[in-house]
Image (cartoon, rainbow, N blue to C red):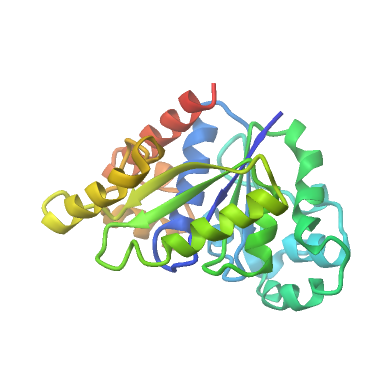
Length: 254
């Protein structure tokens, strides 16, 4: 059975989508079957994995709102073993359309559970909010990865997210756990980055991944070419960091 992992943080620009694109491709490169679910209306994970979102006929929006079979929305990527259910700008209005549905927090779970037998990992790229679609993602997930940017305001809002996770765990998804905090955009030359690392490590101890994602221009460049960094520059620092993270995640879930 596959493991569903949500990548969530309501703060924008912390590396959720970059992590979704590159962690999924590195896990797939290690021989696992991986599905990315792009649950962000900006659809950056979709375009970052080479999907032309203008030509997408069935996206996660149709699955959530119209009840389309998820299998019809799956699109293969350039990397063997890595598929994606793309997003669409229409997803912006999905939360309002879902308000009157029965068990509205469980819709994504019902969509993804049948796919667990086909994939080793299903990664959900969440939008930078704590709205209904993010709640759906956390309700469907077995665990959550929380990217934390090594910046001054990075720790702001983490308590809100943890509180939301606690509520979802008690009311909707008792198996939900924190897979780990992932420090992104880390620059070892900056004293601040090291302070943030220590600040996150102190309260959360073993919940912080040993791998940190260093600030690396190749990660941004790769996305603009619609490729994971593994295909763009396999020897770059960003690629090596995500490869190390993929191995750490696989070892943790053995």
